[in-house]
Image 1 (cartoon, rainbow, N blue to C red):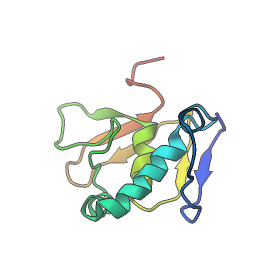
Image 2 (cartoon, rainbow, N blue to C red):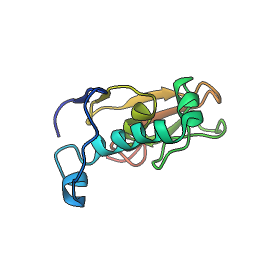
Image 3 (cartoon, one colour):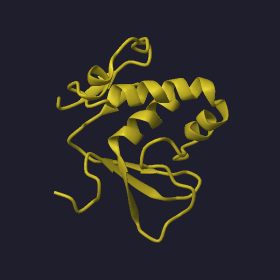
Image 4 (tube, helix red, strand yellow):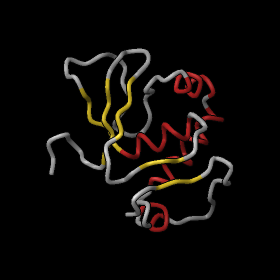
Length: 122
């Protein structure tokens, strides 16, 4: 994958893509996750407002939190990060090879989003 995946919020949401184009392209579906977050921004304005306040709201992917956990850092996915950026109305900006640390403003829980399923996975 490219070193950095970026897409402007001003770009229209893509239409007419088949499953292969959506999930098996060079972005591995991250653009679609972000576009779906943008759609949810319109569909669920209350959820979008909470995300705008920095809450790590529940979305389709691992990364949202409802309470502070006993672990310091919870693992999250890049798909969650992309959807979260979309629901917040932000440009897509992800380093697919890096880790992205988010802090939930409501619970204080740290979530580390990466391409790994668990923090210890190689």
